[in-house]
Amino acid sequence: MQERRMNENNDWGSIGIGAMIVFIALILVAAVASAVIIQTGEKLQQNAQQTGSDTQEEIGGKVSIIAAMVGDQTDCDGDADGDGVSDDEEDRCITLVYELAAGSEPVLESQISWSITCTDDATGATQRVWGSFDGFATNTDAQGDTPNDQMNLDTVNVDGSEKLYDEDSDGNLDDDDDTLNPANVYMISLKTSPDEEDGGAASADDVPEMAQGECNPFLNEKHNLIISVVGGGTTHEILSYTSTDEGALII
Image (cartoon, rainbow, N blue to C red; front, side):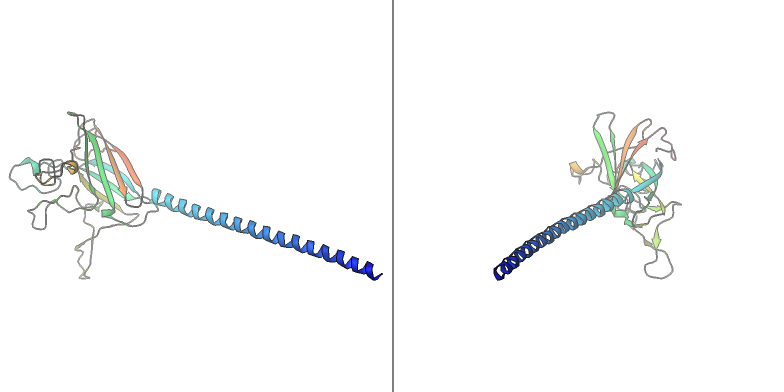
């Protein structure tokens, strides 16, 4: 009887050890499965956040053009000195009315760049002009006698007034505001060819590969306009010149 009892106890002990081994194995499998599920969930969450962020930057962080028209075709940059020399008195521009796309964050004018490409009818070569949305009220310095290399005037409010803020709290809006805010409408004039003084091909100081081209408004031509925002999206438009009169719509 005693021997039989000992054998029964041994059998129960073996069954308990086996059950414990199976239980531990199940815990290990569950732990591994849980780790895999958690890791996969975290990776999917990170991918979703990154995709959402990229989509927001691509869609929200860009410029929406409301209207584009032929601008001043005589002296749009205001640097004429009255000497009759056409290089600084017959500047041509196009004018854009734009706003930041919905969902955009405020950006600086210097963070937005533009370029216009076209084809030279005479040579068939590709021409290109470019600049940023940050510029000066005119293409001269504070004394009005030294041209600078800006290819566009400064961004202004849609009514043509300057974007100003009061930096020294004297009650006078006299400081240039370079911030563009969503839900506001702005206007800017882009030069379609440079003066010699702006760094055109005739300037002795030019680096040839950096020289600006010429994409002036020309009847029945189509030019490509690209506007890019640093860290954001890109806007592409075709400028179609059905008229070269000032104020004619080109988009």
